[in-house]
Length: 474
Picture (cartoon, rainbow, N blue to C red):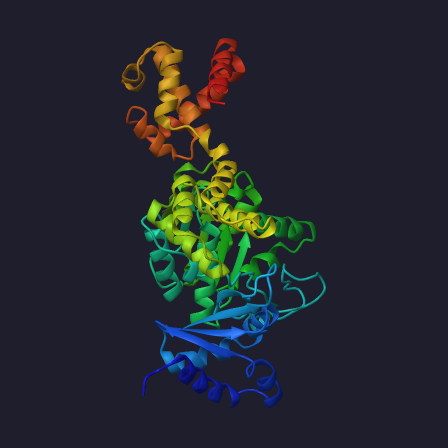
């Protein structure tokens, strides 16, 4: 007997019927119609968007188990939402939305040692005075590995994240530091690791927190004289994820407390995951003892996605939102928005909004209008090569002279200005700037930037150089 959408759904219904109340079955499952089965994806038609949302919120796990029994581990579920009458069209409008296959993240029970189980041990996530050892993971289940697409730009970071999720605290990637520019998926990957760990090890306590919130909690604990309780709380976490760790720059008290927490977790085989917009070597005003610990495990960089990855990201976004757009428009958006994933998704959301809210057809012309708004700002981004050319022209020398080993004062100053502007106007790391401007190391670039800052305050002529060149770049 061949497997059809009807036969699969019939078997699923038999399983579901045995596991829920008859009234709930009648209300939420009898109205569903199986539509088609293709490549382990079952499409079912539901009467409304509310219906789809209710199923996803209350019955997603049951549906997943039923489908997996019928179609195996790779089973997928797609909802087809039938909406009657759109602007006089006789055909009803349908929207296809895939199931997320995930429920909400449940609160976690914290295993507190009996000797510490006293009113003094406060959870910084709850209102003072209320004793509570259940903590929320702060994870967003929508940020998972299923929708974190792999490409050349993120392969190392994604693979390392997967390894950590499979064996938290048990790999040499501890801590795992993910770094890269804005909008490249650092926060998404950090959440994805946490979500995967909770799926595989529900008993582990996972906590995601931004460095800014961590700092605020620490300041609060100092005010209330509960610093030790704050440290003890964080030392009980199994997997600690701190986002935007560069925010700790210059905050010596918070760095000190984080140092103690980090040491305790690391020595006890607990996992630490960090994200930053800079590589450890480029972080300033972070204590050396902390920086050396950041370098202990693995530092993995997220780079701007290549064209193929951008196409995959757009198609995945459209598939998950139940929207279809012509291939040539997807290609146009991917070709013109190269900087980061956030802008890429923002452009496609704007395109869909323009189309649906203004009732306009999605055309290349509409795509051009939307993309223009995103690209206008990025067009101004300058390359290191361009900076070297502008600085060389300004000082009436060629680029080869600028990059040469000579120690003549005016050439050294021109080179230092090129490094200063490269750091200011590009997202390149210090090491990358140094290698492109005369094969120098990152320490030379750091020294150049400090020298330019000092001369700007003490030398009027040098200040004029900076002002003139800044106008040229802006």
